Image (cartoon, rainbow, N blue to C red):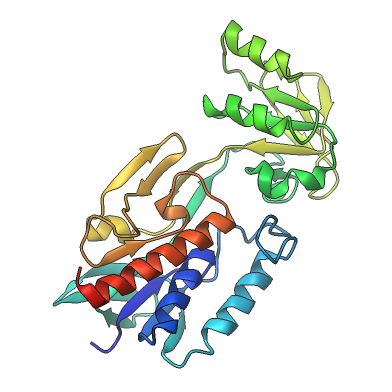
Length: 296
């Protein structure tokens, strides 16, 4: 077993973690299937020193920099199974290759579970988004909307109102008088009826269709529910915590509940963006290295 650590996931969290280990001259292997969560977005905003750059371009540059370290191997594949093996872990890839390493870091991400609303999927990451800090500024104070998905959608609508005049689309859900008063105090309009479709040319958003009319909009925000993008954490017996959006891997200083298995990024935090994922990758990578030095 000549690999100190296998990092599964080569996006913001995974590469950030791998860099810490590579700079400690540890022998690492990064396994990545090439489908980061933010691949649909045309730009990543709020990322220190790279505001406005395309996520895939950022990842490609980061990978090139990582591979300049001689102890790093990169494997383009999907990891389909993981299990303890001796004093480390064995990983099975979708092409049949098996890898073994002393420790494992999961930066496997999550899969967004989007509502089946006509016109939504093709606009995801463009004119439909989840994070106003990442995408709100570009809508240039034009009319915005929030699609109700859970009670925290009320909180989301109050935030989004900082970026433009906002309408909360309840899509048939009910809220109380106190919540309505709170929204009204911030100038947030409320549309109670079911949403039928999103409309606009191409991936642009022109409006939300309700029964018999269209509410003009430039951008729509939703809080998607999520599922693990990979089965590995479950296969290894890692504990999960619940959030309104869905499960995430329980970690403390990057360490999961399974000794030797670390996790970072969207799979290990309830609410995230690219900057937070990269920061958590740094913390998890450094924590893993300390475990190698001091045991654990």
